[in-house]
Image (tube, rainbow, N blue to C red; front, side, top):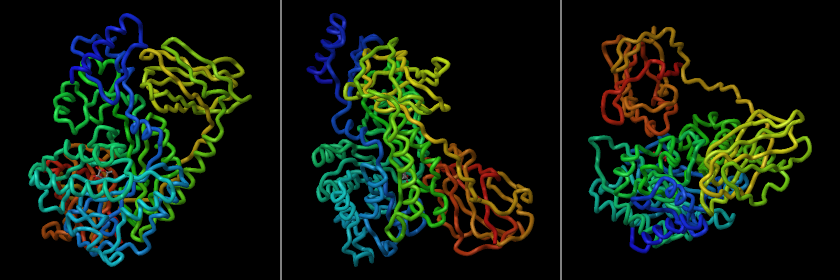
Length: 604
Ligand code: FUL
């Protein structure tokens, strides 16, 4: 900490003792606690941590969209291995305006494109490698997907962001740290120079190299400096210090979600040490409560982003056209992301035509109509009058007469910090007041769902706050309860009752009779990632259990560690099998353990 900042902090603490919170300085994005600070002083400083202007603007967007598009769209993979021929990239009807129009009409405020995914194929004609659209047949190699998206965003007044994967399975220099860092910075510079304003830069932390793979030391400081210099208004996400990964790819945020968090962003050299000392990690449940402040040395305004795909995979796959998430699922995701003080980053992957598929368009429209219907009918009268209050205070708001409701929404004025630690919600029914729910953090937005009630007033009770909280909005809605469609999708059509397990590791199964097998699916149990789950595999078939044939597959359950959903492997042609064997290793390159129930097969 420089001396001026230290003095400001120390003076602030002194002033706090003397004349309360008004003299307390505000800290933008980051603060360091003085060594001698008491918990009370730390809480007071935490209450004065505020977002940077671009973080605030980003949080206010609520809904942002991801477009995973690239070579994987054409190979059916989730992670390409970098050996794909650029010739494969040939969208027949690419229309970036269709993407942006659909997303704009569905309420999204920003679009981010995978300019380069882990396979290294670039969607713009970069000078750094020939592994790009310039070597593809699309538009005779003269096309630029990034530019087409940028132009569409300009036309429809949509914010624009880029995903650039640090992990690159194509670049020869990957693993030669200084050389690859230069290569990466050149790619970043092209993207941040030639496409107008960029509002978010997304650096993925994923790396499936395993313990024996290439080791690349990224120069995060230099990446960060490049962004600051070229696009000072952009937020830097995930492997960045503006926007934090929520910790899963399922679309589920935390009920207790502090934007003011003790988690040191991964790009700082001190992050491992700081986070270990506090026992925090990106998936931890509590990242900012008072208990966490006790031992914390620093605090970051580092708000959460919930990234999830509208389909099981991140890229478009024909066989997932029937697996677009249901309206109920999307709505639950919405309440558990936007409603849990997070920004939702929903992935909608364009297909091989280069269009958002009709199934996704239809679902996005339903989702937008549902939200308009619910949130267009706020029952609270005068909920937007700023209410400044502390723990112990309560306030009653009138509702439209005889209001039917099952959602209450609160918003704090986070421009002045995040301060509510616990609150309760009560409603006045004919029979009197009834408590319908309670919550911890509020932050930018918190929605609470409860069984429907007919009421004429809502009362918010603040139980605990950090100094004085500023509640800038209280609203209430009725959200029609949705039923999930019955899923007709099956991963297995040969009943497991006729299977016998012959060996655990590797998994060998006797299917009971000779069958013609077209594909198999691996489904991690309970959709949970575990250290000994399968990542790389070999699939063998046999008719007699003695002579085994290796089935040609890509041999990788890509991204299964972060997105542990069913992955179906389609065989090039069906194989004859009474016995199947799956020999797999974990992400740590150890023998993987696969349960029989985690495997499905589709037979002719
Ligand atoms: C992950 C990647 O490995 C996935 O493929 C996807 O891009 C997701 C958003 O991030 O880490």
